Length: 435
Ligand code: ADE
Image: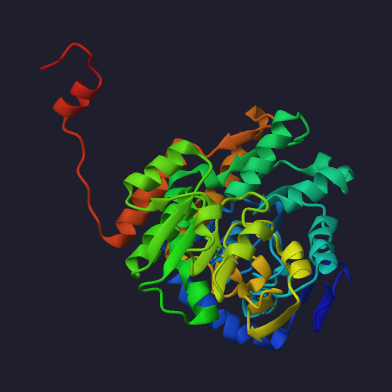
């Protein structure tokens, strides 16, 4: 539990108006400075906030958000509140919380935050329960833990929920599985599937912030190193591209033949993890699946190999087994644990295998979160307007929201583009015209 766990009652009605559980409220001013800094790179979200302030499209909603508690998320929370919603926030990962951002939200924005960096599993789930105790009408998730708790442990609250959104690939996969099995109880919009989300956030955001995390933890030179990327989805593409940009020789491991072929033609070496294990200096998993790097691979690695994960959950590295295999384990530096095998070989694991970009660095830069969170805000507005026609399914982000965000982002960047002439428009809609 945090040093600052509080409940506040209204002086007039003595009704409970706000509660929070954060590390330290005295971090609030530093948090506010950093939130304002991030806001400068979030012009699309700012314009939505201005419009929400005037129109209040979210009036009467109670939004439970389970997201990485960062300065960028703080700007999303402020936007939702400006739209008239009551907002409650908990962390979507035990290690990703920025305690100063959490403190600022509680102190300066009167938003109920339940998140402490490094919280244990019980506190993590306790915080999810705390936001659900407020009886939300909307859920906003990153990884689907909130929806999962609601559908398993808090089913009595589901009747009040209008709908929800999901931020990330892993969460969308979980929700589609719930939908296919017929257990999903309300409509959810897959924000991750918007082009203005995954083309930019997953690729450029993960690419840059993952390298940032690995470098902050280790200060290793990337130039000339052999960097193994497991998984060549959007995140893997971004990471491989940025690692190569810093001079690393990149190896990609994949299970999907199409993605593997793409990696080959993008110029990377592609091979099974078993073959990559003895070659790599730095490893990073971004697959979304379990036990991608296993004990047999750890055993084949070079002495001093660095191993990390940037996928959503800490399941991609077989760390429990590595712990049993190792004759000793110690922290040698913040976020770096040294496992010494019986052969004497040392393997360095970063951030306990939790997503390294948010655990060690600050997550994706605000400029890409601008588009991801613009999708979040506009999708909540869309959900409210269109609720009667929606079923208990996973929906894509409407195309016009996606295009509008791209247009606003270009505008903010001062980039102009062409429009079709009427002749071009006609050509595109005809089938008679050939050579
Ligand atoms: N996911 C990845 N980076 C993030 C950030 N900066 N804020 C919130 N969620 C994120």
